Amino acid sequence: MATVTDFRNFEAFKACRAFVREIGLLVRTRKFVPNRRLADQMERASISALSNFAEGFEREGNSEFIQFLAISKGSIGELRAQLIYALDLGLLSGSQYDALDGAAESATRLLGGLMRYLSGSAKRGRKYDRKPKRRRSKRTQNRKL
Image (tube, rainbow, N blue to C red; front, side, top):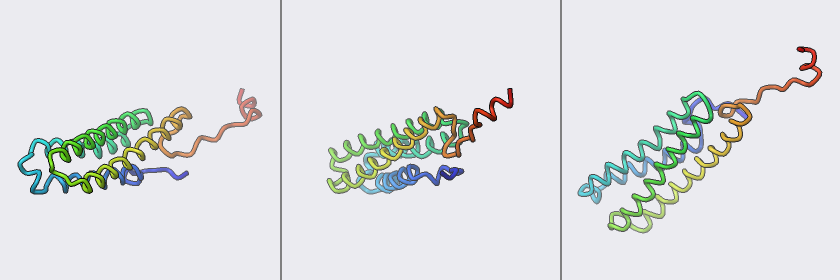
C-alpha cells in the first residue's frame, strides 16, 4: 500500500471537507441570520472536524492520530445534532436535512474505518500506510547473536 504523505489525500478527509463545505454554505443562508449563535456553533464544530484531522495527521504516531480523528468524528456528531435542532426549528427542509445527514454519516463511517485501520497498524508499529518493516528470518536473527 502506498504511503500517504498529505492528509488531504485521505478519502475520510475529502468526505469531511465536502460535508463541512455544505455546513458553511448553510449557515450563511438568510434563515440562519437570526440564529447567529447556532450558526456560529455549527461553524466552530465544522472547523474543528477538519482541523483535528489535519493536526492529528501531523502528530508523531498512530495513537495520537486516532485520538484527533475521534475528536473530528465527535465534531461531526455535534453537527448532526445541530442539524436536527435546525430541522425542528424549521430552518431546514426535510430533504436538506436528509442530504446533509447522509453526508455526515458517510464522513463518520470513513473516519471510523480509518481509525480501525490505524488501530491495527499501530499494534504492528506502523505509521499511516507505511510499508511494514521486513522481518528477518530466524537464520538471519541467529547470525546476529
